[in-house]
Amino acid sequence: MIAVQPLDQTPMVSLSTRRQFPRQLFNDLPRSECLNFLELLHLATHADRVEHLRHLLIRFQHCFAFTCAMGGLVRFEPNHTFLEFIQIVNAGYSDEWVKLYCHHGLAERDPILKTTLRAPGTYHWRAIYQSLSSEQDWSFIAAAQGFGLHDGITMGSADQADGLIAFCAFATDREFDATRVIPLAQYLGHFMLQALRRIAPPVTPPGHRSTQNLSPRELTVLIWMIRGKTNLEIGWILGVRERTIRFHVERIFAKLDVTSRSQAVAVALEEGPPDLRCNAPVPLKTC
Image 1 (cartoon, rainbow, N blue to C red):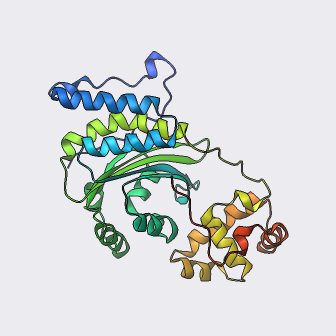
Image 2 (cartoon, rainbow, N blue to C red):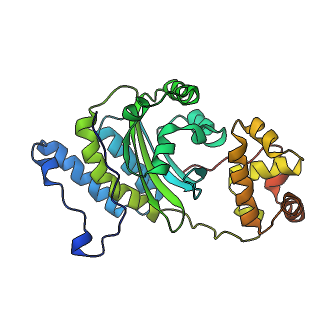
Image 3 (tube, one colour):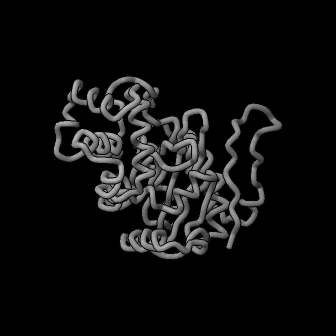
């Protein structure tokens, strides 16, 4: 199985730090595929709107025979665990799968995302699957395959300054030629992930005392806090570990500038936005 190295994460500030052009990748590439690659590179370097990025994702999946694609930004904890999605651009993934993944705890269980958060780079799903052994991991894989997501690649690039990872994922319902595709995708992915950051929505600085700054998952947790549920009970309700709920609660405290559950609840009840009066949490808006 091909071994894939993480993408470069250092900015191109001088000749000595520039990424080298991988001439060997194109030595035996047919002219038509070279033209496709140049088109993708052009789209990536000029994308500055969501619709541009979606078109880029669609063109990439067609060029490399994937069936669906997705890109976005993930906020992660200092220990490199998943916290929340900041943005998602969907290009072909089932809406039902996106809902399950984003709102029902599947993101926290995804072994590919866990790997990307720990060491951002370009990863072949099948290579990671071969190293898994836990029942939870295999239940996630079975769920994904039920939606036709049998194999694919995920690319990620982290920025420690803002605590965000830009990612792109491409899936297929069959195996693909990883030896040929991944080196090309790895080089192109650098520019695609830069495009994701360019079109990202402004990130609200932490500590601003307003429930409007909470993510959909944080709002969900806060709703259950208002209803008197403990972290353990909220974890049961949402199908995630108590540790994950503690991360969300800590993030809620930081964003609301409070130090206790009672203070967080008081701020929420005082502000009383429509989101907190709903019986169900507001879903993450996907692009």
